[in-house]
Image (tube, rainbow, N blue to C red; front, top):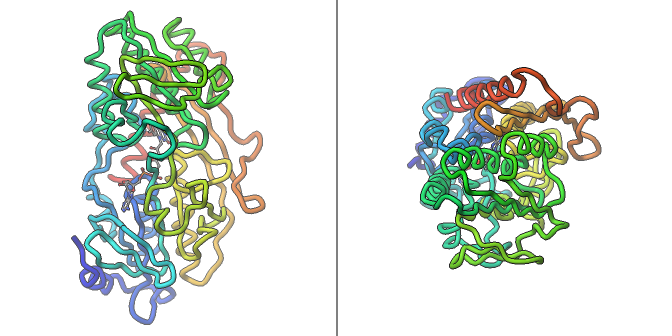
Length: 418
Ligand code: FAD
């Protein structure tokens, strides 16, 4: 575990560009969270300005990626293909602090880590992802999640849900509950339903899948529903909010999901509950009453705590969805802005892109893309600049999109962790 003294020692080696040299040494940026946003931000900071002292605070030696974890559920890949070490980040010159951030003092400009030591910063970047909101769904706490897994943080939960599916009797009902917006990965529950249906059609052909939804619409809805009709006729039922889809409580003892309209007993229950920015964002005072972190749309600096930047799933990014693609794009913009601010400059207005691929089967992919820019204090989508996959296609179009999806995952993980 790095101590403050060791970290300051490492700073001496990083002295270089005069514009960034402070009276005591190189300017210091601490990045909290080594996921898609944080690891990208740390690497980009070092690439743009090697003189910076960049410390990445992340407790886990191995990152387990959520994108493509739905393939793990469907036994289309092993979990180890989702796992990445931080060797590439370290080789890029980032100091790794293998510990958790426990609190932030915005006035003193310090982060306290698990052993009580502190790290000083001139700018702090938070990309800690999400926490499950354990208070939001009656009956659903940490113990219930061991019976009705959320699998919305990849790793042990993913494997638990996969084991439950494999142990289920043929003919059993799989129930997925999808939360209201905003939440991590808007198309994720529906990709999950598709890939579980794919797996059921091979291994448990008498089983069905029910999606209980707290919304009346969802990302790429027509593409998903057309695909379900084509690939899995009669297997997936989607119940929207207006038809009683919102789960109001759960009973893990009987694997029951309760809605205003009735009770649904599952053989396997995948409860994807409401979420919020991870705990450190709450402790740092950058989250508002919604549980998420408001930021300005150019450097993603907190509107609640100056000097602290928040990106990725934890932040409210206007029209931009919570995705790994988005977190990676925001991290590059944020890193460039932080370098400019530390040099006394003004960050340029960014243009950001997000693309979300989803698989309905191993050879059936769909996508949606958006382009975003700042407008009156928030990120808005530029009309007509993005779009979704066409509804009607011929030939191998969906197969090609499935290949694009896999290539995207391989490329982004190589860029961030490789
Ligand atoms: P994360 O990647 O979750 O990283 C957060 C990191 O912060 C973690 O490593 C955590 O350990 C660390 N951390 C938390 N608290 C602390 C602390 N106190 N101190 C130190 N470190 C801390 N996105 C896509 O673009 N495409 C997809 O196809 C896609 N598919 C998905 C499928 C599923 C099933 C799910 C659940 C998500 C999917 N996503 C997808 C969304 C994507 O995983 C997230 O949007 C992305 O991981 C967000 O990046 P982040 O940096 O905000 O958070």
